[in-house]
Image: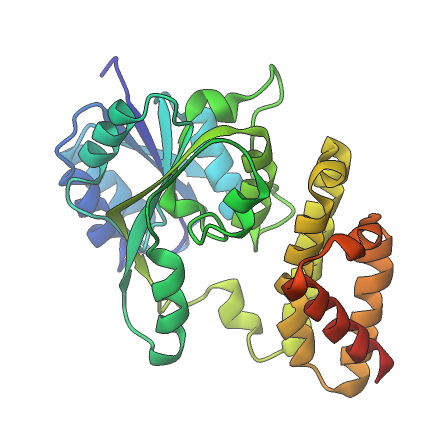
Length: 324
């Protein structure tokens, strides 16, 4: 296959039972100019054998057998191997909707300036408590932005936090020579957020489309949130790691100077409710750390007076936590 329009990158770790459904959704894509790059991340079950079996049935399925790393190293291996004009991400326990790649190709043809296309998704599995939040963030109206504005990241529900409902121009991800966009291997959780926050501000041509192209499995076993959800302080700690990496990146890129108030508001929104869930002394300690390490540490506190009403309310809330 010489011409490849789409490279679909699929990280795989111990997904033997769910892989067939995911791979069959790839095989059913009526789109020959595609490659499905499956990166086995040191699986200890029968995942690699499943991948090889399906690769023998469809030449578009490519298998890379990596030593155990994490989802970031697996996706990076897929990016290194990708030959397509566009990059799509699929988790190995999710699936593409029928005709997804064909629809994407049609939308790209209709929107020649697009560099990132964000599409609607649906759920596999149900949870009454979480479903309302997912319903709001997985379905969104059409929107188009020729250039980046903070609204793209922080007000459009399709941007954060999921990488798998976004298609990227390969030229965009290649970036400057020797500086391609890659996932941070030191961040095996929240990696989507950091990646999106590293790519969007330097991009142009954002298209939000209402086509439902992806099915996301809500009830996942073995995920990092699964392992820490009973430890509220560990959840906060991990969220702060993400915050610090995002703020450091934005500081290095000079984006804080351009969009400081928007970033400050997002940082507060990202951790405020998590901190609120902590008992008194821990709540106070983490609120204090926010003001010292994040707000002051990255010079975001000087944008406090530029916050809108919602941002000012979150600032006051965190300040109240600190005073307890």
